[in-house]
Image (cartoon, rainbow, N blue to C red; front, side):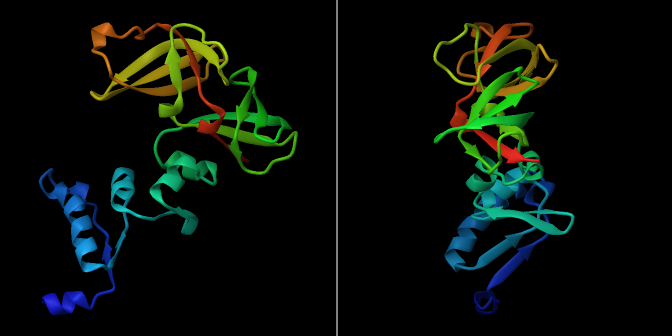
Length: 216
């Protein structure tokens, strides 16, 4: 049996390890060690994003039978090449806007939902006047109770919901426009000690390097 297995070049998995109980789900980590020892390729077909991110050295995203993007987990998550890929992997904030200008370092986009122009450093090529989407992951959004100076892409809103997940909390911030922005923050303090909670008036911002502009 071992001799036959050593001749295999590729092993294909169609079942997600998370479909079983918590003991068998540990097989996902063990399979990586097994794969490294054998030096063969594992191909895993899964709808589970967390499993795909943790098990894979490269991921291929398919939609309607076509491959949309191939890359490392970090490349797929941080630099999606389309809005569908950005939405498929993890949570993401999306702001529709129009390109108003460019510089050596940034693209400037006016977003009606934010009622302001934002700076984006990583973007698809788009001329001035083009309709685009500006995207930013919730963990890249910084919340504060006071307005900060000398920061980019700042807006304000009211915390209308909080999802407590133990190690992190997800804040749902409703802007004046009615657009809801998600911000994920690590729970460095206990609940009673945190200054931001339901109905808090907050300021939020993100670095130009943290957002991605995608053409429509």
